[in-house]
Image (cartoon, rainbow, N blue to C red; front, side, top):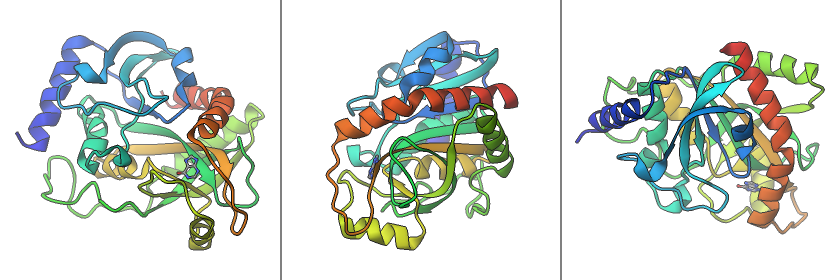
Length: 273
Ligand code: HPA
């Protein structure tokens, strides 16, 4: 079956399970499940039950698609994302984004946890992603391009929607939530970075580094979706200062920042919905 036909089949399966027709899709990264608590759930489908979906294997990811409303606005939420380091191809990693698009989603909100490479940042900071650098070894659009999904050579001059960024900044100010702005560098992982790598990433123009998001954003833009992405800085990697990081520390820092992230994303959904 072609990728397009798989997407259609999966969307058709989901439409049998729920009448919900969200225009906003949300991807929750590691440790950022807090948003689940503010959603009024209508339907919940475990990834394992969805045809053509990969199955998540990472600790801290519950792996389900949740349909519901935030402040009366319909959303579909991915609780748990797929990572390249788990062994999936980038086509598999981004498949759920394609399905969201087929379901009618036109705005994608992505959250993640990342390591700060900007020395001005602190653990627990929220960073609105204004741009990214893709250093992943596989491009999600490599291979045959189906024009029904998007153009062969997508423009990437505005991967993160300027209007959504401005709205989010205003909402954050109103709620007295400090936000940073920055460039996210996507690497494949699963190792955290060496001191020399952190230094390189900072020199390259990165403010934060992580193992997700970039492929999903590329595919969303391929499908002409508007994208907003926000990161919790869970550790700081500054050149020449070796730091040890564990996944548990990353999850703990992400969990600690999850409520302000959830408040901001909920306010954004309400505003645009
Ligand atoms: N690198 C460094 N620190 C991190 C990452 C990463 O990929 N993700 C979360 N914290």
